[in-house]
Structure formats: C-alpha cells, structure tokens
Length: 89
Image (tube, rainbow, N blue to C red; front, side, top):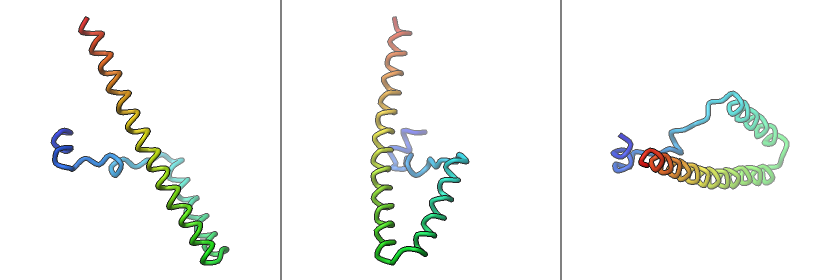
C-alpha cells in the first residue's frame, strides 16, 4: 500500500522510475562514447571541467524533474477533485 510505503520511508519515485525507451538508452550510450572521446582528446584539467559541467547539468535536470513531478501530481489531484464535484452534483 502506498500510504504505508510513504509512512515507512520506502517510497522513492526518483529512484524507482528509470526510462527504458530506445531513445533514452541510445542517448546514454552516445553520452558514454562522447565522454570517452573527450577523455582521450582533452587535457586532464579540461576533462575535469567537462565532468563538472556534466555533474552540474545533472543537478539542474534533477531539480527540473522534481518541479515537473510536483506540478503533475498537483494537477492530477485537481482533476480528481473536479471529477468528484461532477459526480457529487
């Protein structure tokens, strides 16, 4: 039950949901290949900057995903409330 999982601290949507689409998998593979190429071509200092850029980009994307999740969840609750009002008339 979802309420029990939330109460017990066992509900982690950001860790449970991993995209499995072919586009996502291909993008990950491409990123890995590009990082390998950059590691061979760049100096250690420049490659460290690329890694930091990747880290900060991941943080920004995580924050954006959290905002989208909150908005989507809230919108879902509003739809549910509206539907309930319609059938309660």
